[in-house]
Length: 356
Image 1 (cartoon, rainbow, N blue to C red):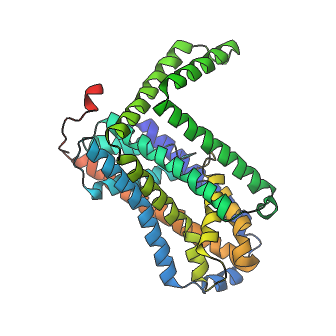
Image 2 (cartoon, helix red, strand yellow):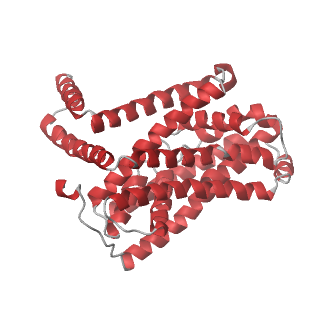
Image 3 (spheres, rainbow, N blue to C red):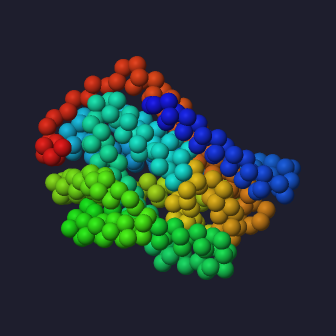
């Protein structure tokens, strides 16, 4: 990667560490260490290991999605290397605002292994579409299965949930429109560009249109790939649903680790689905801050005041901080491997290659 990219990643890490420090200070300043230590001492280790297993499943589902897509595009890449790409994506998504760094990093390391950048980007596009659709589906299911009042969430978290829902819905609708209704997308893009020019918010409309056309062509290829392999979309969507469900189950695993009972996995999974929907689109590395604060607000209903902070520490420790460390180490190993001797991936000509 370029010197500028490395410098930018260092700045992202500093920003995330600063957010972690500020968040930790705010959340733990009124929490007696003796009470916190006593609560953490109640944890049953086997449930923590189960939570870590769920996170491995989370990363593993994305890796399987990558393997399926790349296989359809003519590449024979082992599942182990697809896992490496997924861990790399997790790391860079965690340290960059709005998780913008994960996909470019995965495309970069795929290209080092012989996968064309166009096909790597296509893989990321298809996975993103299915992930976004799954996030919305599980969010809507959560509303239906576990109706939660705005009073329970509090004003701040309710606004975040509204923001996250609208943003995710708009992004998903835009991607699907570009992929499957290109004529409509062209009209919308043209209208938006003309409006920006009239408002004097855009000076170089032709250059902007050219860049957008290149991006839209990538989306068209994604739609062509799905049409060429009809079983690919349900397979990717199913894996994305499993992936997110494994993540959403972690608070319930922590609930059981404290020896608590009375609430079901369905209830807590639904609340976590809403919390993720609320904070996942925020322009903060790893959604650090809102994720922790949102957990305290939403899950106090299940853990009570005394245990909700320790539960948040363990839950976020499993679902984010522990895997940030693991993925960072794996990313370093992948970087060293690809710099030393990139894979020579055997590929074959495929129906989409002729369109490049």
